[in-house]
Every structure is written in C-alpha cells, then in structure tokens.
Length: 525
Image (cartoon, rainbow, N blue to C red; front, side, top):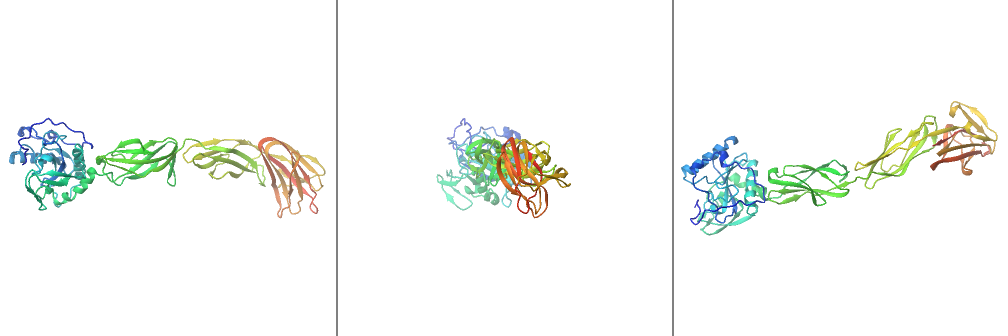
C-alpha cells in the first residue's frame, strides 16, 4: 500500500497558492538525487489534496554535520530505491538538525505528491522526516521551526488549519503504537500534524520529537505569541502618553520566531500605517496631528494575528503662544546701578501640553509650565534683550525677544518745591540724596516708560510721603523701618504700554517723624 491504486491516472497537477509563505527548500538537483535511478514519472494524491502532515524521524545517527546532510539524504534515497526497490525516496521532505529542508520524492514540492511513508494513509498525507533519532533526544528549535513552516505552507495550499484535526480514511487494516486498531475504510480522526506512530505500530518519530508535535502545531498555526510593545522613541513621554511633532519609532517584541511570521503592521487608530517584514522589531511611523492610538499587529504565517495594546501618542505641530507677552517691571528691593530689581512676567499656553519656559538672555533660567513670573535684576542705563522661549512637550517652540532698559533718575533730576537738604553718603545712589521734613515739599519727575519705582532711604524715624501719578494720588507710603535701609525701592507702579508719565511726591509731615530721604526715581522703558 505504498503505491496508489491502479485507477490512479497520470495527471497534470497545478500548484496551488498557499495562505503561508513557502520556506527555502534544497532541490533534488542540489542534494544530488540520481534521477536515472528513478525513471518512473511522479504520481499524485487521488483527490488531489494534502489533508495532513505525518512527521517521521529517520532513526539514524544524530552525529552528522549539517554541511553533510545532503549526503545523508542521498544515502536514504539509495536505501529506498536500490535496497527496498521503491520507485523513489519515500518521504516528501527531509529536514536536517539545523532546520534545512530538502525536497524528497519527485513531482514538485508545491504539488500533492504521492509518497511512501505512512502505510494506509499515503494517499491523503505528505511526509516530513527529520534526519536522526529523537527517541531520547529532543529536536532542536531549528527543526521545530522548519517543520512548522513547511507544514503551514503545505496545509495552507488546501485551506487546512495546522492546529485542527481531520478524518482520514484507512487504506488498509491497521494498528498503531497505542494499540488502537481499525479496519480498511474506517475513518481515523487525527491531528492535521501528527506522528507516524498515530497511524502505524512504530516508535517513529521518537518519544521526544513526538512530544514536541504540539509545539510544532502551535508554531505552524498559532498566533504571534507574547506580542507586546517594547518602547516608543522619538517622543517625550509623560506618564503613559507620548508626545511628538509628527513621527515616532515603535518597537515591539514577540516570542514567535521570525521565520514563522509573515509581517508586522503598525496600526494608527486601527488602520495600517506601516508594514514591515516578519523579522523586523521596530518601525518609524508618521502621524497626523491629534491624539492617536498606536499598536502593532503581528501576522503569523498561518494568517492568524495578534495585536498589542495601544499606546497613546499625541502628534502636535503647533508652536506654543505667549498669551501675555513678556514684560519687565520694577519691583521692591535694594537698587544698585548694575542691579536694579525687576520682575519679568509672561503667560504662555499650548494647545496640547506646555513643557517649560526658558529665559535665554540676558541670563539663562528655566521655569515650569505653570510659572508666570521671575524676580531678577538688570543693569541700569543699558538696553537688554529679554529672550524668552516656550517649548511644548511635542518639541514645538516659540521665542520672543522684547527689549527693556531700566533707568535711574537721580533726585537732582526732579523739579523741587519747598525745602530740601542735600545729604552725602557713599551708601546713597550717586553718593547723594535729598531730605525734607517740610510738609508739602515736593519732587517731580517726568519720563516715558512702562514702570516706575520710588527709591528712598529708611530708618525708624522716617516719615510718610504721598505719591501722585499723572496728577492723581496713587498711594501714601510710610518710610518707617525698624532697620536702616539705603536705596530701597518701596513703591512701584506699572502700565501696559510705554508712555509719558509724571510722578510727584509730597512730604506728609508726619508728627514726630516728618523727614523723608529720597534717592531717585527709577523707571523701565
């Protein structure tokens, strides 16, 4: 029953396409088949359909080298043809311990060639033999992968699931290694990929290889195993969300060997954006603006798929904005000609996520996204460019560079009324100041700017002063201090725009402590 029934006629059998890719196969010519020894034409399965794969071992030594496996195949060919008198080598395929697949019986690897390997079931199956003995030795991973690839390809030509079962009609009475018996014509339900011992009383394919058939089935017809994302680069991660301008590199991992995968697909919002080969483990993807869900789908050579959980990637190409442009204003503090106390204020926003704000000049400082002001100092009399940059998490940035100049107007520049006395001390601005205890004595400065501050010296006996801005009382300020303070900016006022203003101060003449000491008026333009 190694041969087909007499009614089998010669047929022109066309190769069918498969749902799985064809693995590399060493041809008969490449391993050196003696075609003159097999003059008979190939014959094919009667349906012609390959319904199952029968796995064998050749029960020979495992000590061969993979470079010598072609010679091993030739030896089996010689034994089958010349010793046993068969028309050709019995197996359809032979796989060495390194996973190299060899063409067996002639007739075309992509056709349903009738083999001589499974008594009673030759006319429904294809036979794959692993070179060596696998009774006490497990087959290497390379063997499992190649048998799985080959099985998936052959069964895929006929729409058969490598993980499923099939009913095979016995061509003869039989018994298997487990002691199960059947009669000719009985239907035996067997795995699509099964061992020779399942249909015949033999130890083949060896206990260890037989125990690995479940793994082969899973490799041949399963889904990509342990598929998961392995990182997202080219982005800035905040928690589990990634931010980028328009691209990201997605990396993944899987437990399934690359040879058993046809491709990977990077999905953006569920749609295929990038397709890679089965051996790829990363891919760059271009994203349109918006919040995207990115995942990776692996496609097994069986056609089955697995998809990773999605990761959120926000694509943003819009630069941040300054909803309030950076402004420089005077603040309270000790005034020096090279260090006037100022406050820089701003408001920045981004449609996605503002990351930080940086002051690049005249000094370098970094601030959080929620910070809107910074207390600094600036040199008087010098125009300074205050370069401020806002950066969002995606990497977009906007830079603005306004220019401001702090100016010190000495007390001598003021228009005076009433009685004032000049005081000299190195601790005053310019070494001099004006003091008055006469009620309603005044000093008036006129300037063009956007912020002003009154600079005074203070002590426990200092009095009060009224401050008028553009003719209107702005505030009455008490200069009394428990400690002596020189060059102290105690009152400030700012405006939205640069404009001409007048600041006039008047001595209140506070009872018991009428005297005030004025150093200067500072302003920013």
